[in-house]
Each structure stands twice: as C-alpha cells, then as structure tokens.
Amino acid sequence: MSAAKASPAGVDGSVATRRVLVSDPLSARAIAMLRAAPGLHIEERRGLGEADLLPLVGDIDAWIVRGATQVTRRLIDAAPRLRWLARAGAGLDNIDVAAAKERGIGVLNVPGANAVAVAELVFGLLLALLRHIPAADASIRRGEWDKSKFTGRELRGKTLGIVGLGKIGRGVAQRARAFEMACLGCDPLVADDAMRALGVEPLPLEALLARSEILTLHLPRGPETKGMIGAERLALLPRGAILVNAARGGLVDEAALLAALDGGAIAGAALDVFASEPPRDSPLARHPRVVATPHLGAATVEAQEAVGEEIVRLLLDRMAGG
Image 1 (cartoon, rainbow, N blue to C red):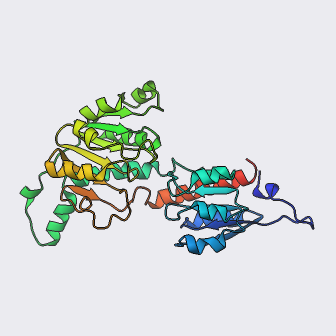
Image 2 (tube, rainbow, N blue to C red; image 1 turned 120 degrees about the vertical axis):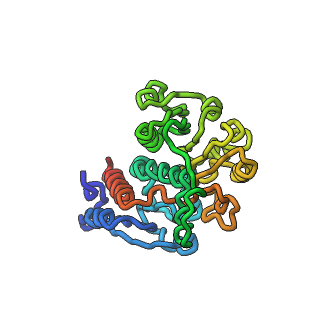
Image 3 (tube, rainbow, N blue to C red; image 1 turned 45 degrees about the vertical axis):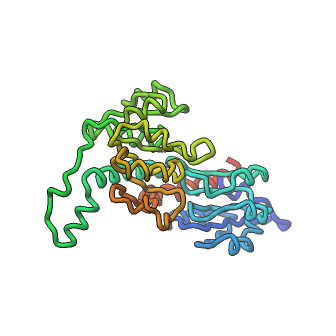
C-alpha cells in the first residue's frame, strides 16, 4: 500500500499534502525515500530547541527525530494535527511518550537497527580499557616507548554478565563466544531456553553480579531501571570487575561507581553514555581507569543508514494504514 492511498482527498479530488518534519539528521537515502513518497511535504530543520520548534509544529502530521530533539509535552500540545512520532533509533527517553499516548499519537522506533554497531562498540571499549590503548597511544604521541606501563588483560576465559538480552545483548553474547568468554544473562522477558541456545547461562540479577568479571548493560532507561546499578549491586561484583555501559545514561549510579573505582573495588569502567550528556566537569569521565566515548553506540555509517531507512519505511507504512 502506498502512502498516497491513505492521504485524504482535497475538495477538488486531488491528494491532500501531509507535512513531515525531520528535526534531526537522517541519511541521504532515508530523506530521498521520504521525498519520493507521494502526498508528503518534507521539511528538514536541525539543531532547534523547544522555542524554535514551537512555530514549526502547528501543521505537521508526522515528525521524525533521533536523540537530539526533545519532544516535550508543550510541543506535542502545539501540534494538533500530529499523528505519528518516529524515533530513528531505539530509546524513547527524548520523547514525552505519555503526552503522545494521551493524544492518540503513534510513537514508532526501530530498536534493532543499530544492534551490530552497539555490540561491536562494547568490545572496542573493552579492548581499549583492558589493553590500555588510549593511554598507550597518548604515550607514543609524546615520543615515549614504555611497554611495561601498559601490560593488559585478555578477554579469553573471562565471565561476562549481560543484563538485557534484546537484539544488542544477543549480539554481544555472539561476539563474546568468539573471544572464548563465558556468558551469563539476566532478562525477565527472554526465556531461559532462548538464552541457553545462545550459549548464555540464565541467572537472577544478584547471582549474575556475583559471578561477573565483566558486566555489560543493555536496557532502556525507565523508572524501573534508573539507578539500578548502585552501591549495593556494585558491591556484589567480584573485586576488580569491569563495568560497561553502552546502553543509556542513568542506569548506573555514577557517584557510587566513582566511589567503587576510587576504592579499588571496580578495576575500570567503559562508558559510552552518562546521566547528563555531555558530562561537563564529570570526575567519572576523567577518571584514569575509565574509557569514555560521547554516545557513539549507533555512530557508524551502516547504522545511520539502517536506522534512517527502517524508520522511514515504518512511518510510510503506518501513514498508509499498514
């Protein structure tokens, strides 16, 4: 079914134009797919805050965002024609989903399109941390040659605890097997047999933490997951464990993690996300045993193209009544 079939007819029998606002970057191919759909007017406006967006949303029928645009209740209330909100990515924490639901607005996302990119980044972060790659690179650039300072650790034989076995968590488990790691998993939405089929031993969270030499999180942020890894749960990890968070900022109590790093209970952390981004003046981001990146999980050419094209296909299907 094409988008034109669902477009209302004007008084003269012509197809009425529906307006789609794109307020975050999409790939050129995704934009071309939108512009090729009949009956749509596409407006691209990037880098705008709430005040600048307010005069733009009054006559839009659909809105595509990524992670930068904050879709607030005020903006939703100012968009009486809005019927679809589409997030080119997984998380919805930049959208007031409750306000959208109250209005009957369809909220769309594509949680699996960036799974490979995030799963690969997890191991990039781990290798950088365990093999001291950033510090060794900086040393070389200073003209030094001191191998003894950068003796690292291997992934082989380590026990990896994976909290969240969606597409990204499953991708991490598959790659961990190639590194000859033992995998533990915790996810109440995934059957134990499905985890075992991936080579993952299913465990309750506390039991998983007690055995995880490396802990990686792959969960959305919500009321039930915010701050879920705090001081008490960090204390359950084996001394010298490593924590990886390439999911969402706020899952980890950052003050508790900093204290665990300073006290030596946690040997290191690899962080792609922070509770507040960017993490200005954050002692955690600057900690010598932390490797940090600026929310790069989905920042590959392939993932950018995939999330853009997938959300456009999904949005066009919904607008066509699919």
